[in-house]
Image 1 (cartoon, helix red, strand yellow):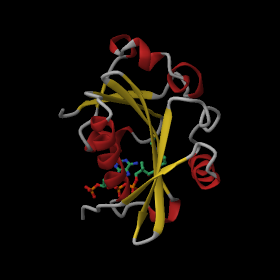
Image 2: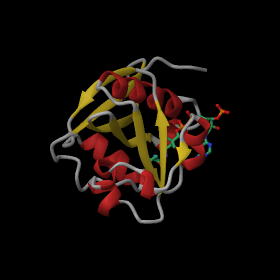
Image 3: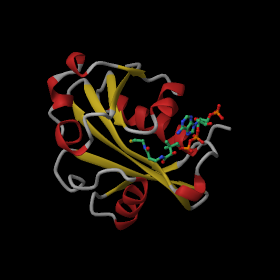
Length: 147
Ligand SMILES: CC(C)(COP(=O)(O)OP(=O)(O)OC[C@H]1O[C@@H](n2cnc3c(N)ncnc32)[C@H](O)[C@@H]1OP(=O)(O)O)[C@@H](O)C(=O)NCCC(=O)NCCS
């Protein structure tokens, strides 16, 4: 089933965002720094998850994609990722990168492919996520999106 989720901007200070990320073991240290945008997703008024973006010219880092624990495996993660890719496209990105420790298979299912860090743009490698917050063992994935 493909959802069209209600999407609202969220602040990096949002307690629900921070709680969801912490519960999923995702970084929260840099949420309130500039250059990040976050969104809260709801289905029929009920919050189901969040997503975030950092945009650097024609590339973007998709980050902080999380579905609330009791809402997983219903298709919301796929819907959030699709809507975040639309956001990235509207922001001018043509390639979207992400780092993940445990969900590479989920994103590969959605068209992302593994890339060597040596082949990634400096702007992506210099993000807090890539340079310090995510372990070196985290997989780097990328997807080219339509203009
Ligand atoms: C990864 C995550 C967002 C997936 O959300 P979800 O709502 O459970 O995923 P969906 O229900 O939309 O799944 C879509 C498809 O991916 C598959 N899938 C879901 N999680 C998967 C996983 N961890 N590995 C492999 N496939 C997965 C589903 O089976 C489904 O396939 P189908 O369409 O053939 O049935 C969620 O598990 C999560 O919040 N994880 C913790 C945070 C995280 O790791 N975020 C990524 C780093 S930013």
